[in-house]
Image (cartoon, rainbow, N blue to C red; front, side):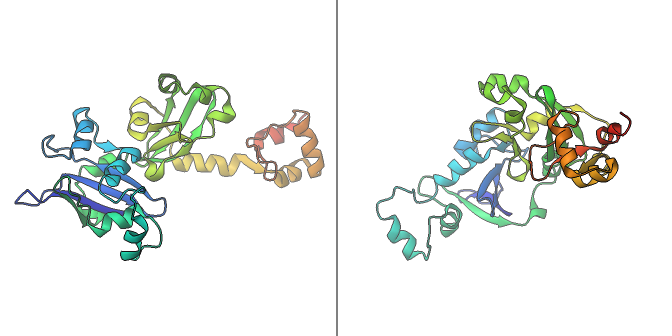
Length: 270
């Protein structure tokens, strides 16, 4: 992860107006606006977020800010420009670094920072990022946040308002979500995403820790091999029980099926 302060050359004293965070492996940008930001000093594309009270700029609009400051992909002499700058391929970050974020439209530039130079209040903001998420039935998400809190979030209303209701059509579709880079939210492909701060606000706190949940999984979720040992039977017998609905897998990967231990043990009592 690389961090840069967004500054203005028109200011006599260097002031960090915003912060650009770049995740190298995923090639993803995020912009964070400080809590004490001045709307009139903040770069235009970012100030519209500030007016709405939003301090974290999503990856899409953060990337738009970056793209406004580099050579576009449809530039006629793009190949020559890349060659002159020893770039084999079009790389947004490398192009951004060539000019340190400067462009002809304004006087903003980038200044590299270490993570410990970020504002102290960012620690609280970042603590609300997502560590893990588990899709539950009835359109709920169980979310583990970095500050140790675990919340149960009903996302039905949010999804309905986004008109991406196909996500709610069946559990398999609903459970196909992924955590956004950096824990900035969750997303279902490219059609729908929900920011982490929104989920934190709407979630209902659960009196559980991540370690508690890990202990539960370690002690209550078993493989087919372990199920065979408990029931003293073959894998074929377990497969037959699954086909007849006597055992219910908790995942859909046929080559690595997992089962609830209590359900398997219950078969010994029948």
